[in-house]
Length: 511
Image (spheres, helix red, strand yellow):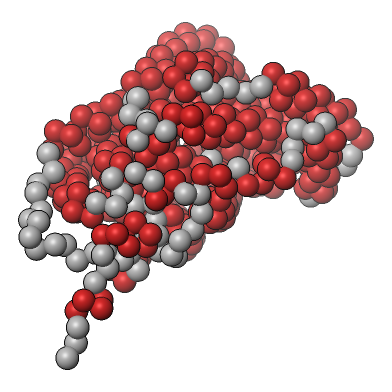
């Protein structure tokens, strides 16, 4: 007869089997996530490039405005509860009864929140269009409403897998989302123009949701619950308390990175300028997009370390992450400054060439905005949601006030780009200060000096290399190689940097 005990995965084995691809060190997990994030971001730039060419500058600006606003709302209300779920799950990642209880509580809260939000957003569409001074946006906002439940279904599972530290599953979902959104958004935009792009944005996350169901059912191994230990309902209060602080951070931060587009449209009423600025901002935020993988890795790791009082290990990890961020962010920003126009033209086409004048002015956000985003993931993982929420709130307030005064005065989005970098600088420096105060983590002044010397050498050599057309790809690769070689020569970049998480690979089994 069939012996069910042979198929039972015990609780003791569960913590060793939680990932979809069996045991993986954090280094391997990070590699998978980075590959998935690169593929996902490539898909994003394929979409931006394709829509820019298919729709034209003005309709691309309208699409960017509506999708940007809808995405902000989705992230604000769609990620708060699932992130709280991931936080609670990662604290006791080998307690499957707790994980199941947390998930069921989060599902009930999420269903209520998303259903209410969908109805409110749909019937508020005419008022949103009036705020932006363009009533023709009403049907676009109404159409984009259906992105909210579709996106919520897929993002819930991303954070569920994040709480389980099932980074392999997260990687598969990320790649799937990249593939589906290119197929749906570009495909439908080609045949149905602007409306088709919105339909594609609805069908893409729905497709990813079905992938998540397959992964969860067939590949995430779960222990059979002990019948002598009945499942207890997880307190709603514990989920809401964390979700509230995290949602405040999401509201301020997501509004901050999109408020420029909203204010250019609302104050200047120019779709073309909105499209050009969004193109430049999309390029400037490339490092931020790539670092999403790192934030997903750090969030449950810091949560586990903090919950179990591993303060020294948390300090070591955070300090090394900050150091590597500094090493890699500066050359990326320098190269985007040197080759602004060929980058813009390569991605968006010649019609978007004027956007190149905005890109260098946005690079403060490239560097300091990325620092803030990663440190926010660390603070949130440690349960200190007030720190990033307060910093982001101050940055957003400053951005709104300064744009309301200076943008109508000059009528030029370049002032908006300068304001964005100014506020990102403040947010990055403030988050670094609190990282030092809370975790005693910092970047060595010797690292800062060596990186600046290497960047100076890069900028001196750059004018002597070809930068027209596609030549800039070869030149930028050569310059980055020279930069890394210089750091190796200065003994700042070593083999140890390639395995930054190696010493922490046993974290998944610690209690």
